[in-house]
Image (cartoon, rainbow, N blue to C red; front, side, top):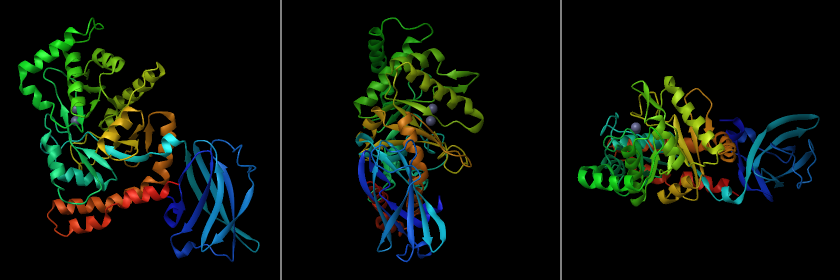
Length: 430
Ligand SMILES: [Zn+2]
Ligand SMILES: [Zn+2]
């Protein structure tokens, strides 16, 4: 975290584009306090282009007023971009840098949304993961996530166990239902995020499933060479069922390399991408470092489809099979730009293309994939706003895990922290 963001608070940090807004910078600690005995000057930089409306010439410095130890300035923030306020302190003939403060101006459709981090593809020990559902949820808060869903193979109930582990407890992590759906004799993996019932359970009625898939198949007409008709129809059936339950159907890890081939087949993947019976595409999936080819191909394919005019809702997921293994957990996630954390709002926002996939491998800088406008904004948020959000979540996550471990004092302490992350975001938006 940059020192400026540790020692000072700039409010607001996200402002409406093409409007004048009053900005305040206050010091949080007395080793950096502003005093009326000194003078403060600011140089303003819109990072993309000099503002046409603000009448602020390039490299021009302005004096700032100190009122009650707070620096104030009013400025017109043009367009959708990041802005830098480089502040200097002056006394006598001396001059020193106080810091570079950054904020972002956003158009109304983006300004009205908050960034929410989530992972909607993970496993517990109810399938082939390591830990209990409640443990996985606590770990998700510990790494700064706002929402999550456990998606065990062929199992919906563990996701409900994750919710039950915190029943009656005040926690700001949204824990939603989920499962990884594996239709019989179909290599495609599918995530049901937030659906109200298990789609895996429907496979138990084999005759009904087969009859319904046959019906879809009969309406398909000819398919491209190499596409298995049953597999494609089975995918369509699964995505339909997920939607019937109010869930988001995700086409998982399309370039997973296993058994010396991609699974599912290239022909099936291409037809799914071209016809999009799914709701979202797993742009970044839980691949280990040596499997980097798979995410690279998924990203390349996404940009190529978009270049053809084929827009595509996206998510990034860890597909972690353990939170303490040192790999995958927390490496890939989604930022959804949404008005609230309600799952219906998150799903609508993803479908409306208001999400990005983030790669955050330890020791490396975060990389963001998705529409250019959102990538640009997400990079600002990951640098300037979300690290402090992570710190607040860390405290909550530790307490959630203490609660799961049987610490009876954790629930009360969690209650005291309730609402902090939402309140901070609300304060930072003008
Ligand atoms: Zn899978
Ligand atoms: Zn999985």
